[in-house]
Amino acid sequence: MTVRQLRLVIQVDDYDAAVAFWRDALGLEETAAFEGEGDARVMILEVGRATLELANAAQVNLIDRIETDGRHSPPLRIAVQVDDARATSTELEQAGAELVASARETPWRSLNARLVAPDEVELTLFEELGGGPSVRETDSAPSV
Image (cartoon, rainbow, N blue to C red; front, side, top):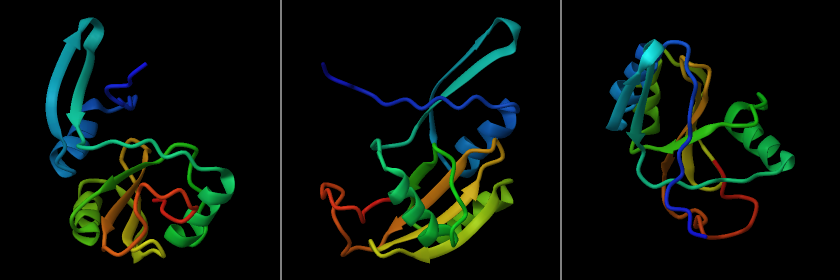
């Protein structure tokens, strides 16, 4: 078996606001959009390279302590790598996101900010600072 694509589907109450946030504010590239009966609408956005991060409760608690001073994250959180975590965080706040924790350097050498998108999806922005653990390593530290 070969997995060729990871697609995360977010059900949103306000489709237009979600498009304004994810496509327009965050800058994800629209690759397809479809409409159907009963006002059914969907848009596929390109997010670049995707990985699936599996973490046990202890690791999630560690991440939450570092990134948010202990605010517990939901079971599913989206993390996206950006070039400038501080500037992107400010832009997304202006686009309607709620700031949970401002950008801070983590022990694994990334600058991470935590927000809640207008559609209630928790979002981590991370900026790689270099010199940290590789994504290929299997120790407990390199997580966002």
